Image 1 (cartoon, one colour):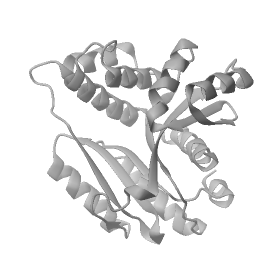
Image 2 (image 1 turned 90 degrees about the vertical axis):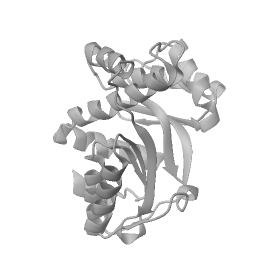
Image 3 (image 1 turned 180 degrees about the vertical axis):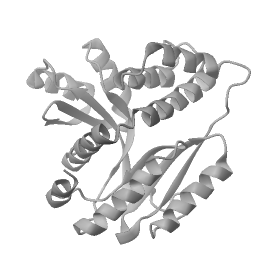
Image 4 (image 1 turned 120 degrees about the vertical axis):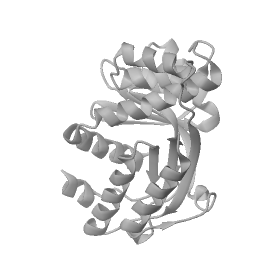
Length: 247
């Protein structure tokens, strides 16, 4: 988990500089819409919608934006999004796994293929790289007024595998099948999450020199800038040298 935690920290630092709040909101709104369309507009009975709203609040999305997204999902003119994934290698042999929500699959395929070509990557077939990643529940919380020792006891009982503290951020990981119980326990403890969801964590990492790694990161950022792309996972090792180069 330490590598995941370090990557998250770097992303937060860059996020503050890049000010990509608008794009974050766009991705969350799409998740709210597809969740509400599939399971209804009542978050109390729709677990996926409840989680999407939870993440929206963690990202400080205004309540009006959340309510509009839910209403839009249940309207006659609601967009129809499909979920799709892409797998491939960036330059240097770094594995890339992409999760998308799109209303135009041809546009998304063309954009993803173009990015792979531009940065010297190779787009593979679905399933070719999934073995390199393990799906885990990941929760990030603000370390404000928390007793980490008490939290660890509660989380381990709920099924958490690890808890990482990195400054003002706590990252909790669990097996995919324990996601619901950990999320429920955090709710019972009235602990708000900044983000929660099932993430793809690499089983092994790939180490590159700083210049090569920075090129891969530019590729990843290009993918993340695409509104059709929800998440980009990779197994690039975040070395101390690379972290220093990004400061």
